[in-house]
Length: 148
Image (cartoon, one colour):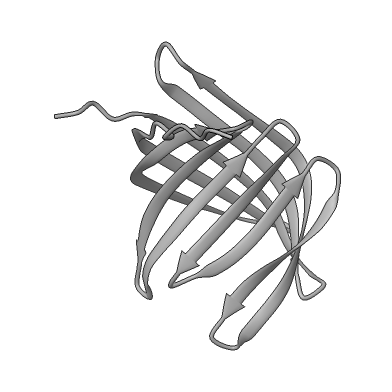
């Protein structure tokens, strides 16, 4: 088994999150710089987010069948995704570990090797400790950062 080094592409990432809970809707937007790379049959996007509580490292893994968002640092969270399946995850808080459940409605991703532009479109319902916390729509776009 030979493992070749993974080529990491520096990327500029835009994350837009819409959260619908009943009649209310919140939108959050974030721009970050990180890395994009392929490993076996999965694609990875990795970036850090600065928050009041500290730095949060986020890794998004996506393949044709499933996805996973891992956050570590100031926020610890594990959210798995698989089309039309309810999957258990976890959300660590200062008050303890809460169980999450995600039901994935849409899981699309593209990456154009010519333009070095990619996107991830993820729509899911989430509950925390069995209580519905809304429908989340993540649209993540990223493109290669030009080396200076």
